[in-house]
Structures are given as structure tokens and as C-alpha cells.
Image (cartoon, rainbow, N blue to C red; front, top):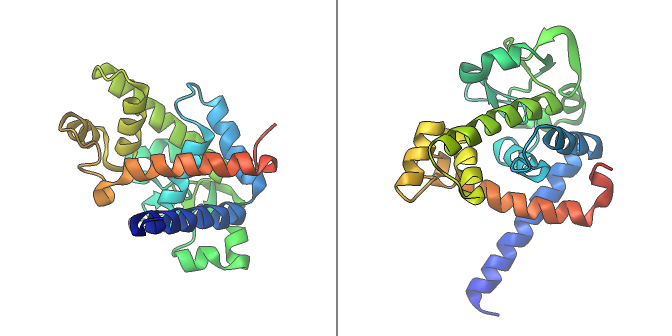
Length: 214
């Protein structure tokens, strides 16, 4: 095996170990709920594995606040853009930091909706399944925008939608037309990274059938 092949193999093993660790932290019930949400959300383009891959990229599956608390929960739904949808769903207390989210006692509380609270209120975020439902609406909207922009290949529709989830549709479309869909995304690799994670998550789910919905 060449040196590069060894490095690639080690990187792949590290990524799979991360997926295993983080999905186990989320737990089989919530992992299955995310897949059910994707199944119920419409076109097959937005799969459960894709939603889980986005979740892993965004937060590692933690109900944490990003972007000074504006990006909320496991799917990091941003209240500057999706306030109405956040306000329409139950609110869970949101961890301020990853360290807090990973503390067993605090982390468990993050998954429990607080009566009378919605996910748009300061310090709150959606449950993982409600966050997944909002993400499906957002992604399907970007797919429709990409179709309206005369993008037809399924792989391109997904790549543009995923990039747009990170940088907005205008940035994703501009990058796509320039030959680099990730031109404006975080790290200039968001869509490529998420789609690689989707493949790895799919393989992980096939190897762990009890984590898949019936």
C-alpha cells in the first residue's frame, strides 16, 4: 500500500469512528426519527443519511447554539432566516458550548421540550426531529430553486441544495455556475464534505440495522 493510500485509509477510519461515536451519543431512537422525518418529507433526494450527515457536520448531533446563539440545535437552524419555522415548534434548552452539551446530565436535558417554550426564544432550540423537519423544508426549497435555475442532474441538485444550506442559494448557484459549488461555503468544502459523510453514514446504517426505522 502506498503512503497516500495509508493516509487515506487512516482518514477514513477516523471519520467512521467519529460517525460511530456521535450517532451513538444521539442514540438509536433519535437517529431513527431523523430518518423517518426524511422519509415523510417528500422527494427521495433528501434522505435520512443526508440529514444525519448535515447534522454531523453542523453540530455532531448536539443541541448547541452556534453563531452567537442564532444557529440553533443539532441542525443549526438560523433564527435570522427561519425564525417563523422555529417559533412554530417546541423549544428545548440549548447548550451554550459543545463542552456543556457533552456533559451527561446537562446533555440529556437538552433533548427535553420545555412546556410553553418555542425554539425561537433566546436560549432555546428545536428537538432533533423538529429541527430535521425544518431542514427538510429548507433543503426541498433549495432543490426547487435549483430546478427553476435549469439544474437537472440529481447529483447537482443535491450538491447545490446542501451548499445553499450553508451559504444561501445565491452563493451556491454562483459557485455551481463557476464550476465550484463550494466556492462560498464554510471551508470551501461544505457540500463535498456532507456528501462524503452521507456515503459513510449510509454504510454505517447498513451495518447497524437496529438504527434504521422499520
